[in-house]
Image (cartoon, rainbow, N blue to C red; front, top):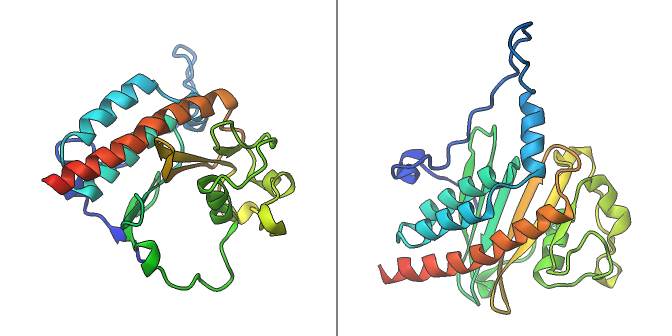
Length: 247
């Protein structure tokens, strides 16, 4: 499936839409004015400290009840997730039962910051690409199907995966059936990675993947807050889908 470059004007709808927040440069030094911390330091601090969960859930509820088109809703939610988490890159996947799925990506500093695609029903999916899945796809499969050792420190009791250094993942995670996990080296482009399941009741309906270029951007306390947000996100995605279908 190829990504769709969503039109920015059609996704805004009176809000910030999917535009990335501007990056502020470091202020010049002054003897009389206190020096402002560099933008990278502020972004790293934001990544280590998620925003207010209550405010995020309130905005999410508003968006889910508007009945807007699917691509526009995903763009709004992805923008909210970037702001809430302070991460550099977000991917959101959603599929219910054997129906058509949806997948979007949003990132900072990308010429095409928002990508959206529809994924075929499981029965329509073709042969996997040559070479097999990469390390991130293997980890996504482990989270989606809960196929991992719960004793591993990189998995939470709710089944999320997280690490502050992807280069250490290869040594700490052993996928099922003895399949070796490919190394996530410097070419991956990100150091911190989190993959959180989206559930409605006991059913897994999707995944939230977050990446940051800085090392050590996730903590156990952060993951609990992200999981709290993801729990409502799964419900909101299902609710918005039903509302849009009725409309």
